[in-house]
Length: 247
Image 1 (cartoon, rainbow, N blue to C red):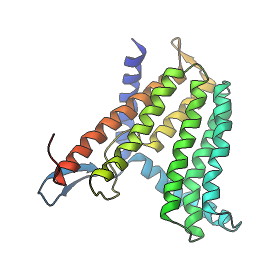
Image 2: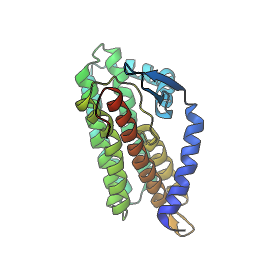
Image 3: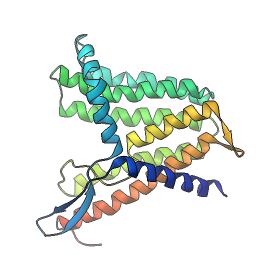
Image 4: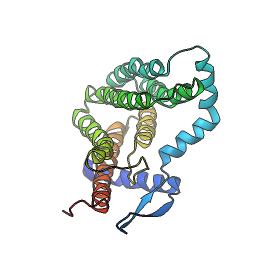
């Protein structure tokens, strides 16, 4: 079995698991032109974020807020942590690579809680956080590129950026609200797969002669590019529903 086919096979398994976990709520929405489309309202990433928010992050955010550290400074600390994760991944220390990737991702969860606790939540803060997320993700994937996974790292980060770009690009064409879009391969899902893959690689680096990280990266490649295509299709429906020319 070729590596891309193996990646596709594992991606199907992961997608099935994510769909099961999502418990997707399919809701009919109708536009002014009586065009109906379906959207998946609840993604696993949102569920993970909500659960961690309720269980841990609000308390952590309040504790950090007492230190009077600005939320944007908290967000920026991820840029200091991500290169450490990149270094350990590049040098093959996958345990520490996973640990610092978790820390970098954790900052993304915490900064919003800090902002709310300090009553400093802002639109620029949300924008700044999203931009830093992309920098952090690119830095972490650089570790794979430097560790003999150049093609896989390039394709994975390309898919990650494209799936993120698909939604804001539509906002330039038509007005849209900030509802969840139906697509696999969202950032939280990618991080879960990536971190689990790093941990497994630290224990079992190779299976059937194939590096675990290569399989994990191909899973991310498949789900991100499939997710990007899903979003392109969904964007077309939104544009047509808004009165755009059907192409």
